[in-house]
Length: 549
Image 1 (spheres, one colour):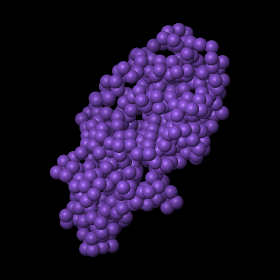
Image 2: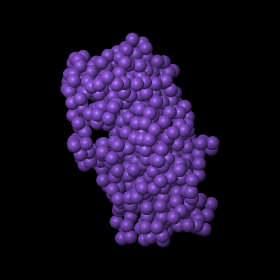
Image 3: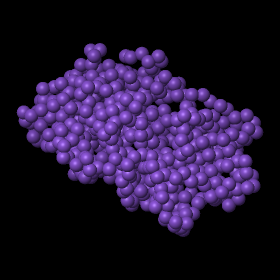
Image 4: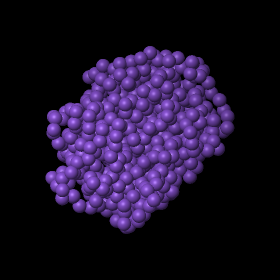
């Protein structure tokens, strides 16, 4: 195991066989026009063997491999029915498709191999499991080089997949294995601390523990205790740095797909990944739909094939050269929106417009109120809302920033949760797709623990503050401090008469019953009252990204 300068805590794995994983059974089958090599052993540089299923066309021609690297078990078929309203049509995938992975039946029929991998320490693979780690990155490198040098391979390796299968692609490409030719990160975080585990410095403790205990606990060895590790590392340190790729080192062709709907999970990190990679050939597609449905939708699979045809198979007229560099959906409501083509991200024509908090009317107005005022709410139980009614059609596309002057009464810290919602002309909430399969989501979300308010002036921009999260600055009694809250990217159209509503409170704004996969934060610091200062010296405002008509 690689030593990154900190100790990793482990838990004993849960028996893979108890979870329905069959014992190792290396074998080759010819079926459905494919050669399938089950439980193929691949040796890592330290001697550990991991196992993969290789699906390739039944023919003599070398083909490019597409790797799906994920921890959910290569033996399992796609099973989305545990998620309500997931939207994936069963006709879109075959029985060979892995969870969040490319469907081998489709890709082998179009001249590709697909390889589903059980990483180190997962299921029947040897060793102990760590996640997004330096060790896993080294294993991915070794596996790519193995795939690129097999007799049936043309030497151009690609990667595709959703979530975990996307996250590993950022690091793989940054490490530059010679045979990796193109990647397709489809909704995957690129900064584990900021994007997923500590939103604004507030620990996420709903999705993370569920993921560890129900999704990645299956091993004949030991499994990284991510819950304990996250608790031991509340600030950004060497542990989190070891899981964060240097995006500037990614130079290969990259087709990035993100969604406005994955607020709190993959939205921010996927778009940041596109923004910071150095690839000359890179494209971004951002939608407002359900992620799995969008990944497997036949027209999008064909779109991905155009990309891989060009960069893995050398098809010059695949169609990619006519793609816009950026294509974005501007949402109007759930599953209603128009796409626009742009030259880059963030949009060059963006105008940052300030909407100031007016405390008496609870509205967002164009000018700083001349009179100083306050808004007070119980941090643990109450909220405050402000609205703005648009006088003309307005498109907001990009991140937002909420700049507040705040004071904590009865506490040395405060957690701020922010939601941006759309209201129709009558004041009714306009819903949007949310996370994996929910249908009542917000426009966007933001979070900040006040003690994490420190900014990096070199990395912060007008619309996107950057918090180092390397130390805490607790509040003194009576101290009024400015905080800049990053509100994640979104793309939304407001017609004349429609409203933007901003909610600020001390806890999660979107709550769901047990069993619903969601992001949650129960360990908050919200004793006493939160006081927001407005007007005069206190220019508390929401900064929104207006795209001119």
